[in-house]
Length: 459
Image 1 (cartoon, rainbow, N blue to C red):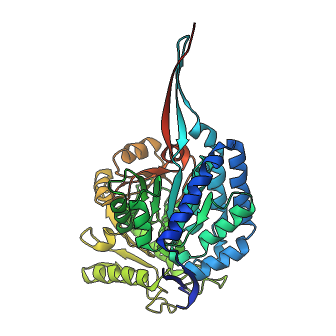
Image 2: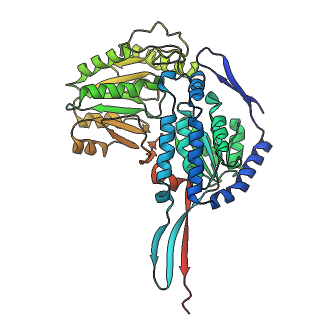
Image 3: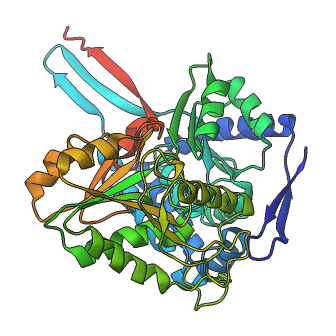
């Protein structure tokens, strides 16, 4: 066992600590989950949905407290009000789609046979959630997994140490059995050992590429299903007929909000050469208006990155790009302390030889390049190891679909960015991972098919 320590990016102090559980205690927790799961799955679907939504409401009742905790743990300014709106929207969206997502597939019935395919829960699902949107990313899987009849074990990020605890308290207060939804503090090795010993029936991981590789390695040979949502390098493409003001406002917000620490944040932008100078000018004006500072200050619009080591990587990418000929458009903010408090940056004269245009930055920096046509933009958007979302900007719907069909990505946005619609599958390709959450497909990934081929006795 060891101690997990959440270091606040506000001032580098220790904000919270928790003791991990050892392998034997972890196995006992999983065994309790497995024992409770069958009774949970036997409850009517409507009852499970009602309990999950009551748990979500209980989280909302503590939102004021949670918003301040998030500022302390990962630096998001309190002015943005936390995550409850998206947390609730996703839970309700999945509840509304449960009947369709879990409905049997009727194959046929006649005088002799009845045939259908049921969706049945896996059993015990491990959810490993990240720190950047700790409530919303967790609920993406926790809500549909529980609604589908699984028991859930949640292992949350050390950076947002209190999130799983708060969710468990809320869900248990709403009547969800403690064994059915558990928050557990685990070391990485203990987690890997549990997966390797077939403790879980499905694993859902959101995090780094390296973390996803570790999950798949732990599960190797166990036939445990693993769903992953990993890195991203999401592009925006602004065509010559785009609404320029809307494109600048949305794409720059998508690049900088949450200090750039968004799974589907915009990390690179390609602008038709006819709009390039105007786009860059407007983008620079927006970013120069940001206020970097303590996230507890309601005037702060961009807070510190969640940890100094994350800011160090972003600074390294920027410095390498500048050394290779890139142009920086934002002067260092007075509040930039060389640590977690990092000035936002816009870069031009960038190329795909630079890491800032290839590797995930996950910080408040974006490179902007001019392009001459769709073909060049498509080639550049696809020149990436990642594929989560792409944001297209044009008034021509048919053109957007034609371009979108050629992009290697999980989601194509038109005239918007950085949003999860619970009705659509949240998925990616290449090094962004495999599987899919939300939508009815999310239910399909959190259950397994079971076929019924029933011959009738007709005398």
